[in-house]
Amino acid sequence: MLNESLYIAAASWFAAQAIKVVSGIIRERKFDMRFFVRPGGMPSSHSSLVTGLAVSIGLLLGFNSVEFAIAAVFAAVVMYDAAGVRLSVSRQSVVLNRILQELRERRPLDIQRDVRELIGHTPFQVFAGAILGTFIAVVWLLVAGDIKFGER
Image (cartoon, rainbow, N blue to C red):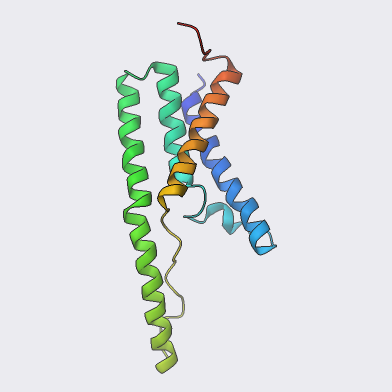
């Protein structure tokens, strides 16, 4: 049996990552597959994935279902983490890299690489990911004929 919610979640993640690849090509004028798997950036693929999952479950099983409640709580935790904890880690990484750079300039260090800075998301990036996931879930299920607005 086709698990549409799982496919919608995956398609929502893929769409968000594809947008990051295209914006990376435009911004840096080169194609780099790392844009496809790199965390952070616009829109939040984490938010897109969990929102696509929750909305599709709500539309298929009902917004009063236990499955939707579980997916909605899961989505809220993931999006809070992306905009809260992970954003703080990103900001701390910037400061840590500045400290490392200053230390390298004073004397050689064994640390060769900087700490990854782009890990979390701004609230707007999380919101954009949630809108993208919602859009994909609604369009997917409308095209599949699984939901019809105006019917009861």
